[in-house]
Image 1 (cartoon, rainbow, N blue to C red):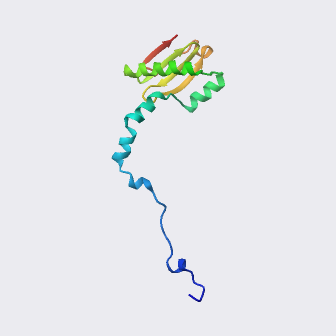
Image 2 (cartoon, helix red, strand yellow):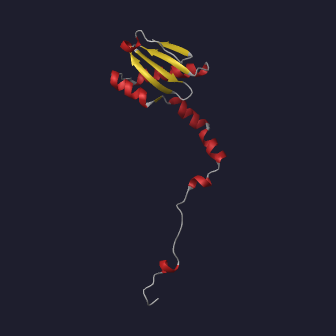
Image 3 (cartoon, rainbow, N blue to C red):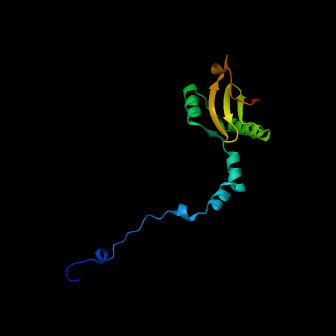
Length: 128
């Protein structure tokens, strides 16, 4: 080793990045995804699509925490009845919600609701 040769030149280290995905069995991933805890977390969440967020910002629609609670309860009611896509009207706000994914697809205020036809829904919930 007097010629200045390093150990790494003699034994090059060639390892691929560790990919944990290979080590997690698909059944375990599915079980974690479908766990009661995960289902409980998902049932508490109300998602907003990018389109809905854009429309709400453009139209100045702001939801207070108590409003979100009522809307979440309405989504729970729709889910219990087997609804897929619901129109939820709360005060002067209307939202189309994909019930299985708990996602608000679009939202409009009172001005946009007038003379509007709502399509591709299977249920409607009017909240007070």
